[in-house]
Image (cartoon, rainbow, N blue to C red):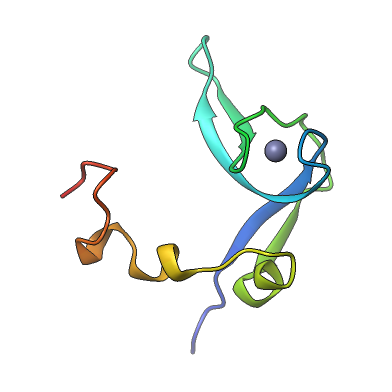
Length: 81
Ligand SMILES: [Zn+2]
């Protein structure tokens, strides 16, 4: 049984489009949801969606950088290696 991976998506008013949502800590060490494109904090909403990889590609995301992942050693920016 294979589980389909999904990614949180929400609307960014700065980008004026649906964007992939990331999480980050704010100044108060509280988790906030931010836009992965412009890093603008996204308003808390109850209607955030979860997209499959195929659905994300439909709104313009590609997964060349995600499919390798940090575990493959291809990521030079995260410092996890
Ligand atoms: Zn944005």
